[in-house]
Image 1 (cartoon, one colour):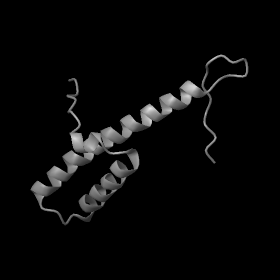
Image 2 (tube, helix red, strand yellow; image 1 turned 60 degrees about the vertical axis):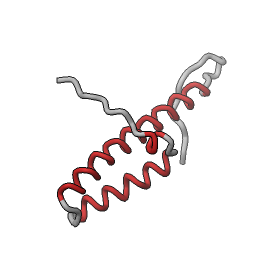
Image 3 (cartoon, rainbow, N blue to C red; image 1 turned 90 degrees about the horizontal axis):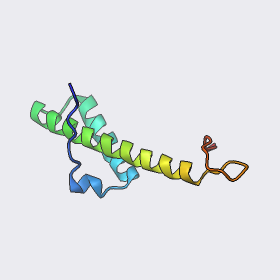
Length: 85
C-alpha cells in the first residue's frame, strides 16, 4: 500500500530547521512523559510527524547544496563526505 503524503502546514513550512527540531524535541518530551490526554497525544503525534518530515526535507536540501558545491581535484563535479569535526 502506498503511503499518503500529507501537505506540510504553512506555519511549519516557514520554520527553519533549528526551530522545527526544537518543537519536535518538545513534542517527543511531552509524549514520553505520558501526561498528555489521549486526544492531545494524537494531535501531538500528528504534528510531530509533520515536523519530522519538514526536518528531513531541510536536511536533504542542505545535503544537495553541499554535494553541488563539492568539486573533485580535476574540477569535475563530484561528492565527498563533509568533514564536520
